[in-house]
Length: 428
Ligand SMILES: Cc1ncc(COP(=O)(O)O)c(C=O)c1O
Image 1 (spheres, protein in one colour):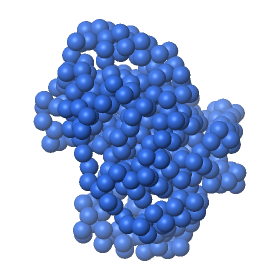
Image 2 (tube, protein in one colour):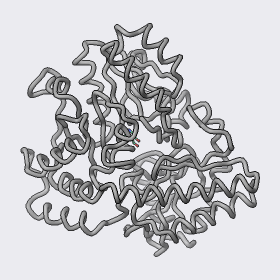
Image 3 (cartoon, helix red, strand yellow):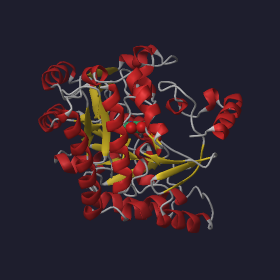
């Protein structure tokens, strides 16, 4: 692939943007080489300034379940924009998307829209603290909930590369209030919640972790977590920023049959536009301003263009849609895993519906320690470069999930399967 124009643009970007990017993982730091500067997207493909087409499995970090530039989404965004970009008032668009989400996700009775997943988790935690009058929060190692100070401890995703899995610039007292536990470990969970029950405001969890590769929570772990949090009056927050409307119409909570108190959403509900939301039971949500004393606000929150585009996208997602997409992904993973087994290759594809990741070992991965042990490091960098050479754009970091959209054809997935097999045949 010739990427000369990308290289020139990235040089320019580095002169005016920090590291040439607006989010660190885009920099290709852990996979070597130079980022590709994209010009436009259509369906399953991204196109760069050298007119290369890339089959995109990053999909704006999971937001684009309908692929790039879905015509319905584009049209609805255009029509809404023609009436004005932002009013700073309540709009019909907000009411309609709120109705749609509350109908699909029964645990959400009232919802508040914000502008990113980070804002959603940060605000949900503030609400949980305000509601319970407690300060401590519990999270799980390797789960990523955005770049909120209190949550940047033992986080996955791009943060996993930073020393101590944290960040500079975070006051000690923010992390002091955060307890991070191993994912999927019922015993440690029971002990910790029993010990700190009077101090813990909330437990926040990705019900299917997607930021240490893909790790579905064990059903018994989530059920026990629900029982214990109920027993101790602790708010259970499901961070479904990635899983929300990715797995099914009712999100991961419907798949598991476990109902959280609060749910955070993002990514897919904006159909590619910047968005976040959090919602839950009325009794808790009514503690938010203007009804209650927990303050949270936003100039662009509930922006009509975002809301209309998001709703247009959500309306295209139904059971038949998920069945088709999820079956296609299951067949893909089965094919690759069968190949790995037959050829004695120590790797597997871990997947939950259309969220997937590659693991550089056969044994299952159930927590962050496993995820690190199963990461490829230098091999992932080589795999990433190998896929680029085959015209395939994967997430440029080992622990990120890759995603499939409804626009990925059987042919696209066959090409990915072949490229993976070629790589592992030579690098087993
Ligand atoms: C599970 C989860 N929560 C929260 C976030 C933060 O969302 P945003 O990047 O929109 O702030 C992410 C982002 O990848 C995520 O995967």
